[in-house]
Image (cartoon, each protein chain N blue to C red):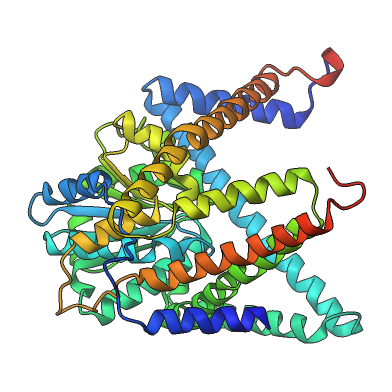
Length: 205
Length: 264
């Protein structure tokens, strides 16, 4: 049985966290807390690494002029502005008023505008799919068309019937399919986790 | 050009007055009443933790509901503390906190900031949720009650794609079984969260636009605060009808031409 260092670390960490959830023990609780702190630090380190990698990639594009130089330049300026606002001497980090203003007045409206365009892009893609797509695409779009009809915001009796129909679709077929998917994914995740915790590698099969 | 026409129609529809023939709120107000009931049952000066982790893509769908819920909580004398475990949630929380401070509600809210580590951060916050640099009367009240999540009477989870009420139920409830959770979520999370409502692990859930609008309509607007803009149903109806018409037109064109070669 081949046990890598990664597997051993995963097994020990996983068992400590699971046993901590089941047994009340201050010493075990302290170890579990330390592991969670480490996980938070690792996540933070991964985020910093990702940001550094992104910056390096776009700096290379700006320096070489290979593709969208303007886009890369804007991205780097945006990163720089937020970093300066959050890390300058006297700043209170992510809660600093300048950072909050940049986020509330610039970042959120830009993101909201981009996502609002999704309606137009989706509609264009649906039309193209209807004209050129295969049977699966037609089925997908026909179903979505029916759901859109059920969600039409009408008043009166017609509106009540449509709302009842939409509610039935949500609670019966949609919930059934979705729950089946979730249960399937959970079983596969449990199996994979059990294999890792028990140290069963592909070689053991 | 069709996109421009579509935008023009939507703009025109948003200018027209509302009509009884168009109604966005769910006629079945059960979900809305459940959340109103939980909020109405809060003791005076209750501390409420708002786990604010929506995503930029779907926040537009729940924004009006979230603002109505915050108004409802404040109208019932609650004091709110905001915490986020995702970067997008933090960005949106910053915008909402800024709006609430400008509305004169600053004394009733505390900013507990961003906790890194997603679910690991969530677990870590069960024992200590107040950062050392958090100031204000609400932060002091939480510290006086131990500074942990147990200090709160209620947790309102504003859910998004990265972290939803499911994470709170899976990670926080086993460690703090007495915690009372309610959630607001975009529609795509409804099938995932509805079973938790039925099992009683969530005390209230608003996860469709129609339920959200029914709730927002039921919450009285406080004129002293920033006026909440009601969601206009007419532009939505116009957009949906236009979309159906355009899709129907494309389907007819496809039928007239026959199936493309090799399709299916």
